Length: 450
Image (tube, rainbow, N blue to C red):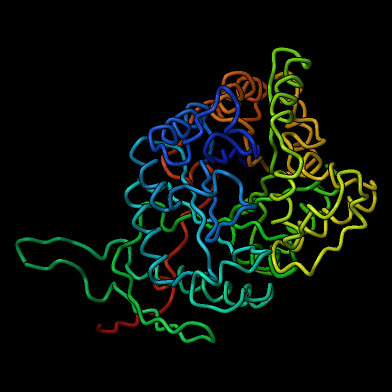
């Protein structure tokens, strides 16, 4: 009998919250991005709420337009290792770039965390969005690679990493003290990858974990990004302005799976939301307005600039029609820029509207209100197949996470939309994903010494 479809939930953990000015709120901890105990507490709250995973984003360059919590924060892979020590069940996903990393090192790091956490690791694959081009300068490069070039490298990168993760068969290590045999030599395999970007011999110096491989997560919505996701990803994060656009993308992306002989239940699409909950709708709106009142208009526009080509918004008055702004070519998250530009034209937004419209808590959606209202909106998106679940970017942490777990999760559970408890121990078990077969076991055994 087919397993009942249930909502998947991911908690986006970033300092004192996703809102640009969350650090200024009276309830916030402004140093939360480098307070490991505070971050561990967030993961524990999400685990109490039976979330599938806690998610840590990343960037490899900063400037004066960066989100405050990007300026001073931990490396994501190091952080999820610390979160693993403070939790028992929740999945732990970290972002790492295919443009500015080496496959062997990254494969070893994530395999290590997967073992340390008991099979709860996930890798959020990014090609690194960088509207300013500054990241390249931190890696001895003169310029940031073009969008499609980055995805070409990413295709090879993932193949190498996943191949390395399969270096050892699951029963390769025997630790036989009496015979003196540590492992079966015929059950370790060299990858011997030869591609345009990478030449990697292998094997990796760590075995597969109890979930086989870390879960692959991706967020690209461009044509190359969709292809990469359909071929390799198991979770995809999306952000759409309305439910109809989300439904169209959901159907389009899921339809591409058959090209790679994959089933829909192997692939979860999570929509990004920023809910704020109050006992009444008026209270929730008040909480929203409290955050908005902390926003300095031009400071927030510097943050918007990073997503729209490093525009100097200081040249424009706040009531300037945004369609009159000169936007340069964007070598960053193209799908997001195109969506923002379309909305600017359709709604004739002013420059002063941009942060609130695109990055303010709850934006213009229905995820702000009473617990029942927020749960209703989540159910609407889920049942309409606009999403399989949600990447929740809480505006103010820990407040909004705690209130969501306390008040919204029980409603979703009562409606049979969300788990009452974890049914397994690994991230793959939470997501209903199979342990991937070792590619070398499925082929004719070819022993090679190393």
